[in-house]
Length: 196
Image (cartoon, rainbow, N blue to C red; front, side):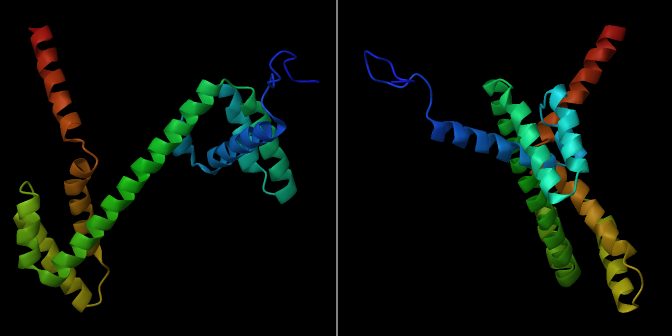
C-alpha cells in the first residue's frame, strides 16, 4: 500500500484531489496578481523572484500562450512558503476592501453633488451639518456657477470643481484618516523640541 502508514492505514500525504484543489487555488491567486495594476501590485507583498513572471504574463496576450505563462507563474508560486501566499491573499483582500470603500465614497460624493445642484440651500445646510469644516461660500458659489454653466450649455468646469471640493472634504472621514492627520502634528512638535 503505497502512501499509507502500515500500522494505522492513514495516508502520509494529502490526496491527489486536495493537491489539485491547492494548485487551482494558487493558479487563481496568480490570475488575480496578473490582473492588478502596477500601483495595486506594489501594495502586495509579492516576492521579487515572482515579479518578472507576472510582468511576462501581463505582456503575453495570445490566449494559449497567456494560459501557459500563467501556469508557469503558478508553478513558481507553489514553490513559495505557504505563509508568503497567505500574506498575498490577505493583502489582496485588504486591497479589495479598501477599493470598495473608496468606490462607495466616490459614489457618495457624486450623490452629494447631485443633491447640491438640485436642492441648493437645503442640501448645502444638510452637508454643513454633516461636515462643519466645509466652506459654505465656496460651495454656494460653485453650485451657482455650475447651474449657470448648465443653463448656458458651457463646459462643466464648476461641476467638476464641486466634485473635487467634496472629495477632499469627505475622503479623510470615509477612510478614517482623521487620526493619521493628527499624528504628523505631534511629530512636528517633537522635532521642534529636539531642535531646541
